[in-house]
Image (tube, rainbow, N blue to C red; front, side):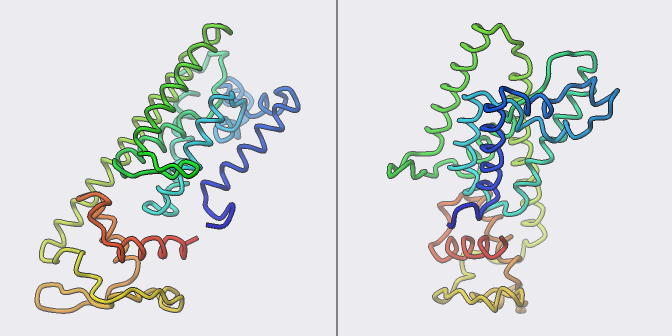
Length: 278
């Protein structure tokens, strides 16, 4: 994949630039991006509800976010496609509004992207439980990387809190919300997949979709139809199937049976379909 083609890479680039500028200005930029409930409620600085994740990131927080987006974000985009940045935006807004309303009189700002980091890690852990990640040439299971990185992050954060005597509850809120939002997304998606599966109870397994060798054709995607299998057997009749419908069927298969149930042709189709959406 070309540099900065995926949403994860673009988010990481923007966050990295803000992090460097904030370090160069000794926190001046971060001070205008952090979420202070009083400034939002009484001075109507509403942008802080959206900008706090990129404000005043700690070194450990920046490393965790970089790890989450670079190694796991692109894998999730293959499944959730353009929904992933919308999910991240929803988590950001929900946490920002919740913090503002619950801690109106607090002088402790909300800053950092720990909620987004743990949201991505939780989503990946449940979507690809046994997926191996290419870690600079080494193939390591994603759950092992997530376990080690989370342990290191919390250990370093605990040391920082003890040394600087900063409040710990913003970190606890962000981490807990990120994990909860990730589990909630997986649960809702599985419920949706279950309803679709019920509605298609007469449809045979998605595996027989690929009855011939797959040769991607750009014009087929522009027309909205799959270049692989133009028809699906539905009972005793045949139906025209769009590329999006085939992709949704394969995503249902992933959430029901796991990624290992996909054939090589099905994986290739999902990767090609994902790239053509960007």
